Image (cartoon, rainbow, N blue to C red; front, side, top):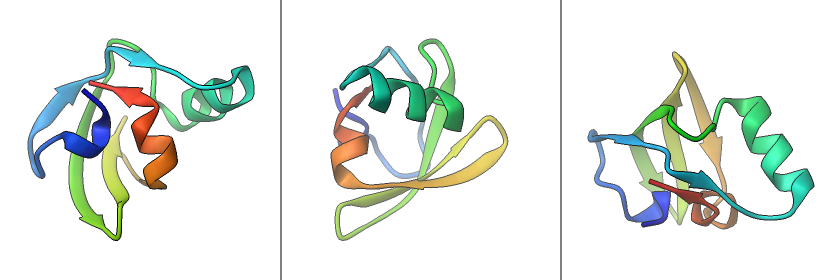
Length: 69
């Protein structure tokens, strides 16, 4: 399921990162890699704030839909 459907406060494991090669590289540089863990902190207006690799990162709804957990 896409990251946008993950429950707030629940840790999830990233299964796959989709999108164009540029998008995948951008997300990998932020720490979104298959097998990594991600926790949704909050969702506002479709944008998602997550904890990934001990960092807090905000991603747009479009980007969050490309991250499968």
